Image (cartoon, rainbow, N blue to C red; front, side, top):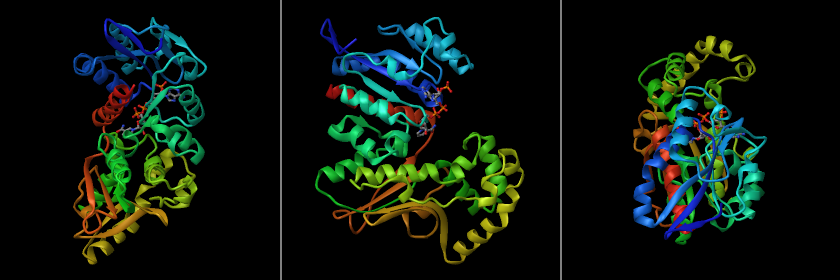
Length: 363
Ligand SMILES: NC(=O)c1ccc[n+]([C@@H]2O[C@H](COP(=O)([O-])OP(=O)(O)OC[C@H]3O[C@@H](n4cnc5c(N)ncnc54)[C@H](OP(=O)(O)O)[C@@H]3O)[C@@H](O)[C@H]2O)c1
């Protein structure tokens, strides 16, 4: 199915890769918004395929809404798409791409998608990403994906917050980035707030793990690698031709805790309590607050724990909220600040849907 027109209604085919927490929320939001979008813009978003890591819901024509809802309910209960009546096993989601234009939406956290996504772009597809990995692979892939505005990726930085659009707007209007400072991990923000309230790090990490704020292995958050990927995407958006290894991230744990199994890591968390209590006390003695911050300037970037002074916008940040501070040639005296919830399935899916709608309007 290409871009089609039936009774004056343009149909926009969507291929969605990933039906996890964000993916299923996106399906619900997209189907729920269809009638309004049809009335407002005269196009209809049609799911041509939905894929998980093993299979897909696809039949070569638009999927009926009832089929999608049934498969999503089953998926939420742990049933793979291959087990759905319209499901089938696939080797690779790229085999689902139609001949004509479409929007490919990547809401996985999978690596290795940059090449098939770039191939899809060169065949005329448009791309929307919540997945950070395609844009934090090689610089050449970033260029292939984003040149000509083929890819939108707002949700990769601040979930539903207008971070990439704000940065692109500044740059497109001739402004120049001087410095970006950002606290862009909800999980690490939560931990900083708990530490500040006097909670030992071990208690805070276990609570965050229990509440589902962290990845199954909390070291995936505590390594800072996710923040480094976001910092790289912001830097590349500014035109800086950097690779991921140019942005070292400070981990929250020692090298000896990096190699043990997850259960042993969780059992040994108390080893981190005293060093972190000392860092919090040291920051407090300076009248500062401890935050996990990415700092990006044209000369380089760093990602790690910083003691920020009490009058810095980052010091007032609480809990899992994110904050992005853009100092530019025009916003030189006081930075332009974007602040708010930077994680969560509903706001992330909404950021992705806004990108899909903006892309569809261009198509
Ligand atoms: N959650 C948030 O607040 C948030 C905020 C901003 C950005 N994000 C980003 O949004 C993305 C999705 O997050 P999530 O929480 O929804 O993750 P998730 O619940 O783990 O879901 C990931 C989905 O991707 C599928 N998948 C993995 N590898 C695949 C492959 N090679 N081909 C096709 N499908 C594949 C998985 O399939 P199975 O179901 O078969 O495992 C699953 O359906 C991630 O990149 C995340 O970093 C999330």
